[in-house]
Image 1: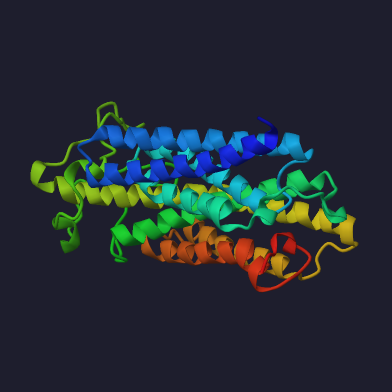
Image 2: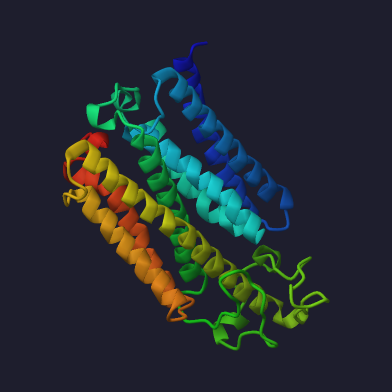
Length: 336
């Protein structure tokens, strides 16, 4: 079996494994008492990460250059970045709800690349002159990793809004971890009603000790458990979203700077207000405003989540919309 056949096989395997991981995570959310489902979802995301890595490696060997030259290759690299960040976020939170949120995103991207793109878009093509540079790996890799972190962080912010029904809630925690808890559960009437199964919210109390306390954190009373669980889930989503966006923003900054240097080398100007460059700047400003609001204004909860939700759409316009809606210097992935 040659490398082209391996790529076709890995292409289909990546979609199947991502789809399986998504279904297992959703099954784990629907039946939280069946722990095996979430474990299978995690195994599926690890398998998807390794399968996509194998596909990109085979493509690299076959084409002779790092596989980031067209839309098909960049979509798979983006999906690889999302599955990697899923594992990082899961390490931070130990919550199955990270997989419930991120697995559909990875599956949708892989499905679009593997099933929707025409065959000529999937085939490796010789690099155009502007891409024959060492800056290809530096700039595009960093930008796609930034997109992955910002997309996952923004999607968790959207999930936060869904869990809290878009209402203001009082969160007790800091940007580095959920270390502080109120002495009493939230008093908002919404928290007194059971909207999540008891085991599904995965209280961070279990097995976790506060770095400031020698004893385990206090357990809520049985009649308060659901309110505490839902508040804890909201805290987990808010905190993890913030940390991922905080990771993606410096990557985006480095990617834009690297792109400007490459542009000067290739086209003789650092900035030409190309549609891609303009939307990259808009994306940077949106997430700069998000981080500014959280760091200097102390925003938490609904308001920064709304700003991050706006950023989710802006990232997609920057990454795909520019290529679909208008041609420019960056429209190598154009096919309409």
